[in-house]
Length: 278
Image (cartoon, rainbow, N blue to C red):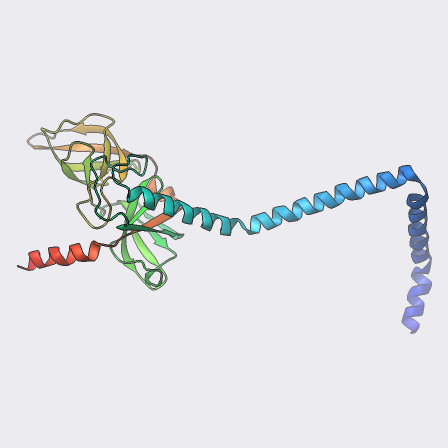
C-alpha cells in the first residue's frame, strides 16, 4: 500500500496531465467538425496501413503453401503433356512420331530439394522425399526445362539423384527426326554443354537440331527435350559423330523438380531380365 502511495505521489502529476490531455483531445474532436474530419481521416489511413502490413505478413507466411500448389499444378500439366502423343512443345517436348498405348503410363510427383552436392565432375541432388512417398531407385527426374537426372538411392524420407552433370549419367538420346540412337554424357567442364556419342557419320546432322530422349529405357519417356546441337565433329578414324548438345539451363540451378513414375517399368524390366538370363 505504501508503495502504491509513493508511486501516486511521485508520478501523480504526470498521470493527471495525461488524463486532462486525453479529455481535451476528446472534446476538441467531439465539438469541432474540422478537427474531427482530420482525426477520422488520419485513423483510417493508419488503420489501412496496419491492415496492409498485416496482409503482407500473412501472404509471406502462405508463400510455401502457394509454391507447393503451383508445383503440383505444374506436375499435372507436364504429366498430361508427356502422356499425349503427337504433341510437340518446348522445352518438355514429345516428338511427333511418339505413340502411347496407355495415355496414363507416366505419372509425375513434385519434390523439394533438400541439398545440392557439387563435386566438380560428380554432382548430386538430395530430395526431401523417399520410399515413403513412392520414390524408387532408377526413376527419372525432370524440371520444366528438361531432364535433370535419375534417382541413385532412396531411404525412407530422402532420395539421392545423380545429376545430368555427372560422369555416371549416361542418357539414351537421339537427334529429333534422325532416329539414330546415341548416349548423352557430360565430358566437358561447361554445365551447358553435353556430348552425344554413337550417332553414325552418315546421319544428316544440322546445327540447331533438337536432341530428345529416345525412350529406350524405363527412366524417361520418349521425346523429352534435352537441348540443341551446338557443334559436331567426326574424330579421325571414327565412324560416329561427337555432338555437342547445349542445354537450356544449368541443371544444378533448378529449384523445382518432378520425379517420373513409369507404370509399365516393372513389366518391361522383368521381361528383359529373363532374356538376359537365357
